Length: 74
Image (tube, rainbow, N blue to C red; front, side, top):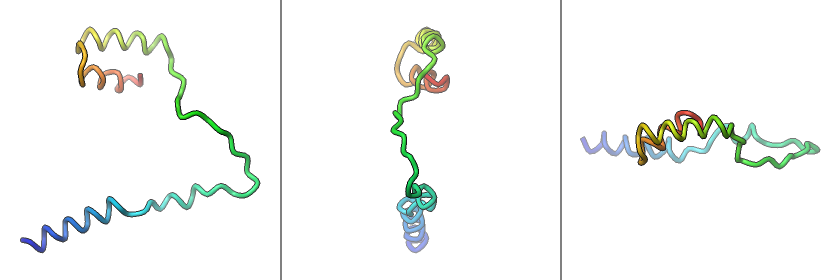
């Protein structure tokens, strides 16, 4: 039983700490132009305002309100 638990811990740690294989694909070739883009994406303000109101009426606040907004992309 102890051996099985130890094996499970090692496998889980190996998956969690395994280096990402896709990191090598993200190497930028020399001479490529780099554009600095913001991580913030523009949102559709009116659409999010409507969903904000709808989610606020339905859930009043808390984690369900935030989940509602996230599910609608706001």
